[in-house]
Image 1: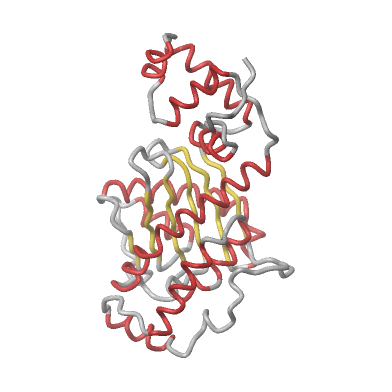
Image 2: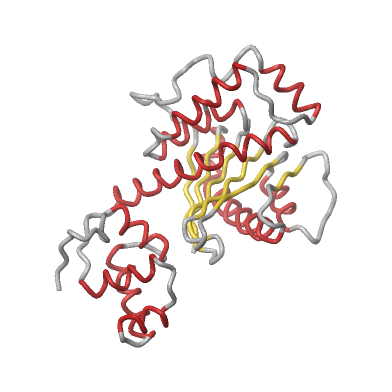
Length: 295
């Protein structure tokens, strides 16, 4: 189950931009960074780069809305991971249940939104499969190596979407339900060693920033919904990663009854899958001990 959205550069400035330090996205040491990329050296930040890195970490905690994530990605994040297209997937990667967002600095992408959204779904699916098969190591593709490969659908998807130099990586919790995956496309240079190292540093902050805006969007779209005692019990089992059979055994009901409860909960919460339902319940404090539910 996929959901896609595309965001292009804002036509009007927002009142408060959390990436508003003017000197951080284009500093005097950018030439040094380019040289180090060309040398394929390890990430050894200069004082200016370290300042920008700390600023990127600090401002990531202020992101609560989608447009803020977009501004952050188009601002200080460009210093370390320059790109024109960013695909963000959040949800259950193993089960293929995730939402996909497309952020693009190309204003012409707005006219291609339906096509871009479909391509983003296909590319994300191929990338996640390749990422899992490769031991969840970062995926790096260079536009210079345009060779046909029947063994790598991700490479074909990158060419189809016109992403050129591309870097993809993700992270997930032990149960795999709260995972995130990021595809940086149309990068000015092929990803190199220092790029991969700084991506590992920033990955946790990108992950939590993405989930904060996803949770904000989810709760902003939907009114508060009361769940019955039984429905809360079901959702606690879903939250803990239990199967319908395990939940049914805990509650002394059949797996089919659990499945029917889950379907009703999804309709009630107006979400598409279990991961989204858990996210809704967590953000709405449904699992709090002092929460009141109707019987």
